[in-house]
Length: 465
Image (cartoon, rainbow, N blue to C red; front, side, top):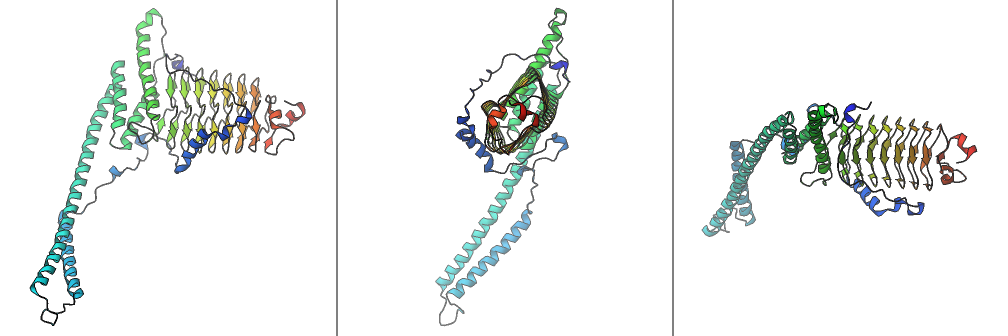
């Protein structure tokens, strides 16, 4: 259900995405070197999915700094090193004596004083080396203890700053709250380890999940409340902008949050949020039950390879979600039971090579969904039991090379569905049990005879498209 709090529209933001022109079937995105290069990046490692819950209720990520220092006591180390040095020195001396065949000092091959002195110097040189080794062990222990102490001190300072920033978020002043938002973002950048960074991210997400008073309107009698609402909305939009900015930074670079979990369950997105060009190789981004009202969420040219992106039961009303030019390779993207009403969803020019995208039981009512010029190669796309009414579903120029696209039991009612210019080259496409008229250009794109990998509703075969 659409919340009343999500009615306000957002103000100025980045330039609107310029949709790229439709490509002919001969210009199949499957041969696009950029897309294949980005998809190949997903195969360089073995990314895994991480189920998201709040930091306080989940197992912390393992970090090197979390390991307890398990060092021997200095006395034991020195004793062992000293005994070892004596044994090594004695062994060296005995070996040299045998090597030079000095069995006895009084034997024919006599051991003169000079040679004996040299052997003693060599032996004590070995002892000195062992002593240096002991000193190195002690220095290593001191360094490790100092590092652990520095980490504890950094954690203590981080905790103090964290408490102050969270306190600012609870202030009645929007300006103070805005300062708390920037303080938390800075803390996440300076966090001593990934767990503390994740905690800061979780708090920012939790702030967005808090209920808020809807806009009272611009009536002169409610002017103060209206201005207060606009100020608090600016705080929320700042968090959305900061999250997008940090996720767009390449992984491994300073201030990058890529790889961390993002829980925006039930959040109202009424402003711009930009993940353009970001890489999602691990972690989970969760928009379950989110409401998109007048906002714009961009994943243009993003690379999703191994992470999880959830929009289950989300409501898109008047906003827009952009995945144009994105590469899906091994990722799990779910729009199950989502509702698209008066909004737009763009997958124009996207490449699906591996992974799974779910639109199971989704409802498209008055919205538009664009898959024009998209390439399906090895991915699985489910529209099972989805309902399309009074909107448009556009697959013009799409290439179905391999993988599976499933429309089983979907319903098309007063919906413009276009497959004009599409090409089927081996992908399994199932329109079994679909109700409603045949999509425009589908039978022409499929060709005659119908490939065994394409299943059509029996009623369509007699009517034509």
